[in-house]
Amino acid sequence: MKVPKALTAVLITATLNGVRARHRERDIPRQDLQYEAHYFQQRINHFPDDKLPFVNETFTQRYYFDSSYYKPGGPVYLYISGETSATNGVGVILENRYYGASYPFNTSTTDQLAFLNTAQTIADNSYFAQNAVFPGIGGDLKAPGTPWILYGGSLAGAQTAFSVKKYGDILYGGIASSAPVHVVVGYPEWYNPIQKYAPQDCVSRINNIIDKFDTLVAKNRTVAIKRLKALFGLEDLTDHRDFASAIADPIGNPGNYFSNTWQELNWNSSYGSHDFFYFCGNVSNIDAPKEISEIDYSLSNYTDGEPWVGLGGYAGAYIDAPKEGPSLISRVIDASYEQQWCTWAFPKGAYNRVPSSPNLDVYNSFGDFNFTADRLAFIDGDQDVWNGLCYHSPLALTRRQTSDLHPELLVTGAGHHWDSYGILDVESEPQFIREAHLWEIRTVKKWLREFDSWKSRKISNGKCIKP
Image 1 (cartoon, rainbow, N blue to C red):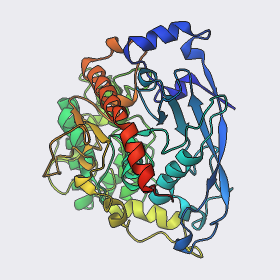
Image 2: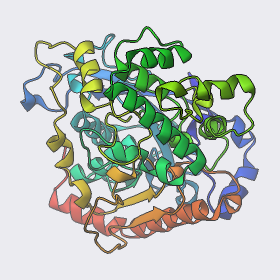
Image 3: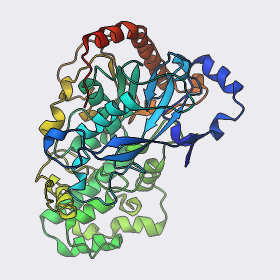
């Protein structure tokens, strides 16, 4: 099986003039490159002391790599974006366990999912780095003898941070982009960037529609509620939360949505989607056709004659609506609504069970908002819906001063790990993205200059941690 170049755009993006020079030397255009899949025998269970089975069992984990720019002595980038060509490195994508072709089991029972957790996943990264082979490349590229630098965005960003902190004697460094290092039960702040930065005529109309629906629910206006549901063909739904979640789809509910939302916006049109703005355009359309605008007035007799302005275009949480102030999703949505899906889907197993509420301490114990590790860079976007859980969260009260060993960058105007995406002509990138990429390159180059002394010190002291 081969993967097209488009799927590895987050692995290798154009950086510096040397990229374009080397690109001209290729016999095959970069966009037509195909990467061959390789396979690695990964441990199912890295921790024999946890009394779970499969300690000596393995599964096949898929990975891809690009050695186009590699020169002996260069680093290895595990799912990295932007640095391979500038530093003569090898770029690698390791497929996460339980995804794609890297599935340990044929089914997904509650017991089998016991091995899908943060501890096992970051142990995968460490074990892979110490044992990986790259056909066609001479020499030993295993960690810690070779600098391995991780990159990840979103959940993979958090896994990057956790990997570097837990296995810092093996994995030399990492860049964590839009990494949620803090978790909570219920996250209404997901909607804050939309409420603040989206077109305000659209936002206010949605707020108004939500207020009217919630008022009907509070007053138990069953006839009006059924008529409203019928406008969407959902009159058979008896649970108001099912209806509220369904029509919220264009706005987004990170636990369950199908549309492209604010989170899917991107500076690079090759990867992003404008669906959110199309939706907002429908909601705020002042020249909507009669059959659409009439819907706005169809329920006005239930709201003291006030029309539901924008409802005709509302075709269309996280798991909690805001407790106060304007809301983009109905307030009938709460944490228990999505928790019940997990309970229904995964009954208690022989040695694993879904808890009644997530164990936040296991995740937050890595560092929470005070997360720190040597050679770990945090980069976030201030318009990201997840930024409230990231290093640069407005909820993080204290902030250390940045340094080469602990660098950080908040990109104004950026969304969810927008630095993951690039184009061949880096000079044509928007300024805030271009400068973020150049900052990442400078950061990694500084780290690499110190690798030899780090390597000799760690190996001589025999401090390498193995899972």
